[in-house]
Image (cartoon, rainbow, N blue to C red; front, side):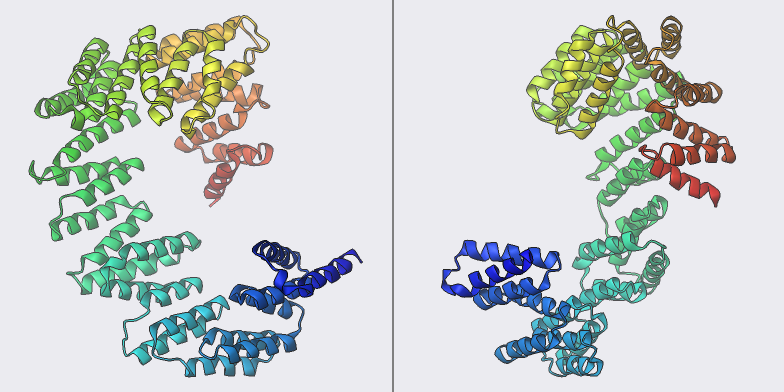
Length: 605
């Protein structure tokens, strides 16, 4: 009854005074109409849309008006309204398509087909009209008629190479990947500048391709084109792009190398590929890319970038492998030294200087030499602020490593002050707070960490939040903060790569503070130390302690997941499956549950 009265009031307000419609009235009535439509109140919605169309002549309001009539099955009124618009707009094919669509909804299939065919028969050799007609069919999901429109348009325009992209996009909507790829490649053969647009469309298609049926089609058609049109570099570019989407970087390298040679390029393509490969831990391909550019010689524009990239990739490889051989790091340090002796421009080589200093301090225990290297670089002057701040940040890190905590704090503070509200400033502030944490100044550290929760750098904000919560969660019942301070000292020893001393410190905490809320955190930290040192037996034991003795703590699911990964490495499939299943069933709200389910399904195959 209330809805009926509201409907009457709406109609009265509409027809009472059409001239009273201001812009605000239109916006109000429009919003009301869409609300009714959303709530499936099609009768009042149709009245509102009718009047809105009458006043504005907006096609959108007319479309919604007809949709309402179709939902109400008032096909007669809908037909009358559409024919009226056809009479007013005889050259607009979209109204005729609306009429055919109405016939389809009314079950008048013969008239539906007749109407659509009449639209095709009346098609004029005008590109914009052909496109508009095809789009009108697409809006009604009449994809086959849209294709027929473009096909007839080619004949009328006497140009067989028109509308390849448009037709490919329709085939994408139909998931007809074979025809879609054919049309995209034809479009590319005519206009190579369409490459980026085609890549964007194909990326969308690859995301929709759940069963990977597109992969062999795209790959095979591209290979055929490359074999038959050997001089067309664009196909190779698209194939390289495809391999990169699939993270097949070795295959991508073969294409990139060929394109670089054929196009007499300066290696920029190989730099881009090397960066992507390295990000995805394919260090071998990254090194091959850099080597290819270095082989061009110093005259190559990207020679310096490739040299630095090659060194940095080796640096990352050793870091990833947790290499602790002094010989390995000494050899790499010498390579950096030789490179930097030849390249004196600090503004161009600052990242290499940072890595060189880091190696000398953190891996060769030569902090004094590392500090001297960085101070010399900073004394050159004229550096951009960002590069100067990066050098200072590494200098502060090394001073902290060398146990010069107050000097590190001063440097972090300088960086923070000169880089307010940017990522490196936030990073410096976080590191400064962490030094306070290492020193046992927990209240002050927490205050600084809480101030970073609103950082625009999500990574820093998350790290700050995690450490702040660690402090607050484990000091509420321990007013002396003794255990928390011992834990912080252990973390600092890990930072200094004094792992055996850190283990002793953690064992001291467990012995002197049995049952403390930090216990699960202690075992997890010990796990990380043993894992880094490839002591799998002890690493598994620490995780078992968390799983068995602290099943209700937040680290339990994480411990199960990490233990399962270790079981996978040791080829203990059944044990890994037990852990993944337990995460899915008992820790379903954990952030690890989705990945655990994926892993479980993979192991079941």
